[in-house]
Length: 407
Image 1 (cartoon, helix red, strand yellow):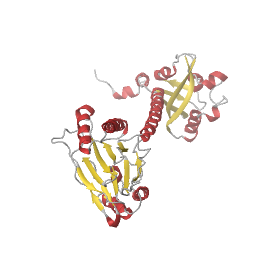
Image 2 (image 1 turned 30 degrees about the horizontal axis):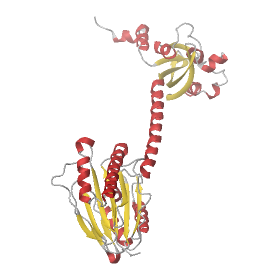
Image 3 (image 1 turned 135 degrees about the horizontal axis):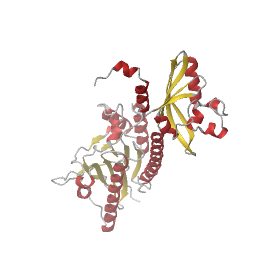
Image 4 (image 1 turned 135 degrees about the vertical axis):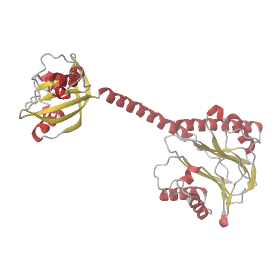
């Protein structure tokens, strides 16, 4: 059977079939805003029956709260002056301009119950037998908008939880610094999110020694922060065991214990760490580095030493075990521990001159006390930092050695 396309175009029955099978609610209104035609989707959106919906305005036809409560048609209720839909319909009619995807939030009576709906409508001018009319498409986006609101509420709660977690993490950073006349300590920390994967600490091991570490978990956010906190708890336990046995663990013992405790297969992540042990009486430093950016020693008369000896990152199953190395501080020297996030933003993110810029600032500030070094480094980094929002944690720790003085 051949189908005559012209016949279909001229067939009201066929046009009605098309209209009734459109998922979007469609209606046609005249100059008085009365509805003269609508499809079945209009009935579905507003849960209305077909009877008595012809030749009335949108308000009564849809169950608009203002029309129902005041028993008045569109244009005559107390709320019509501010109604977005009415304004769009009139503007389309008078100025023959299309209004695309306007939003309407309104309560409608659905089966006698007030229900808030979120609609998106489009008004287009049409003409039939020299009569100006309005073709209106109405999309019910209530489910979409409610889902958005639920997601926003969940995200708000997540942000609150993250903010609390961030405060908890900050409290894990050095607060009560060791009270030892031979040293001065200062630090800076800026997480890229509310919580981060950097963590560091400094311990008083005994009257002769202090230890400190800087740890950087690969990744950011909650998962990285949880690993960082777990690693800190493990290091706290090792510190407590060292106090109990009367002598601190050596850096190589610390690193290999971490390697054993944090295999990649268990935590699905890895981290870098530098761990130093300083004898405050002799100035001897023993350090171990597992894939971390190298610690620095700066001091008077332009002293600048990069402690480049290191092993690979924690989590990869080292064979042979990680080692430790030694250096010695003179009075006035400072040990600088940091994470790569600090260098990344010493200019344009990841740019080649960034490390050079960082080193240059340290060399200029080498004679200053630890707190002033931290202040100057961060001030200069923020000055030349191109990206104001960092996507990596920034950590910096300075330990100043002033030499041992007998009481």
